[in-house]
Image 1 (cartoon, rainbow, N blue to C red):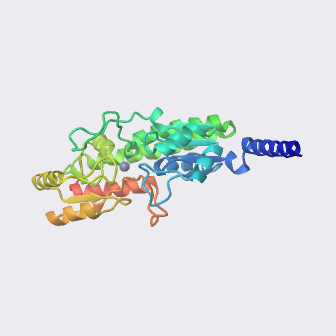
Image 2 (spheres, rainbow, N blue to C red):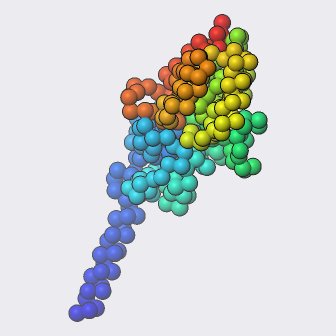
Image 3 (cartoon, rainbow, N blue to C red):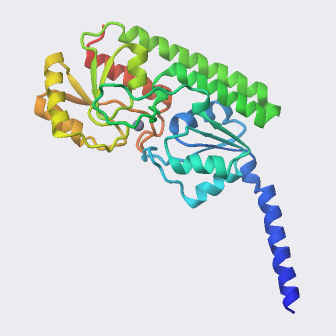
Length: 299
Ligand SMILES: [Zn+2]
């Protein structure tokens, strides 16, 4: 009797395992992207033939995002995983341990910079600045690499993925050109932002970005830091303090209020907020450019 039960359990296990290996049909054409800018690339390049999943829900910011159990299973079953190592440990772990058939860590193709020196931010020496998507030319590099990963994962549609990547690359080149032209001559080239998400933009377009807080949106600045910022804002004639969509605007607003200058939105584009269903990376980058041009009095 006992033996029969054991065999029964073993058979059940075997059936279960076989099912797990084969995977449900839904995983075969699933691409999981760890947060919005990568989701945007995946959707543009591969959305026609695949279900693209953004692991970070709308309105949530991706730093230190913790995956749900269901999402870990989803990653395990996916055909392709697209993520940025170092942003969220639980994503890194799932992408390497429960790996999808093909996983692309964008940091293997985009060279990440160290956090800006002198930004008033304490950072460990090996910490990299993850916000590369604020430089459209780095987005183009990520797009190319993603298309190659898709071509390998789904050779039948390789030509399509490469064609879509070329199209997106052209849009990114145009965006880069607009940023360069607009930000070339601004009366004020100091940009005060709530969190340090804009260093790649600063480097590429020659603006001086001064963050109130650190690389992660919830870091609290010291009183000394706020005092230094006020001094700098007055000295350079800064007109606007920028806050962002996903983190609390309270700090930037109160700083702007104290100094009698404007507070406006500059979107780090780490995720879409729930009230902007039609926004894309490209439209948000253009909104940011308009806001920067207004604040900086760019001709
Ligand atoms: Zn950030």
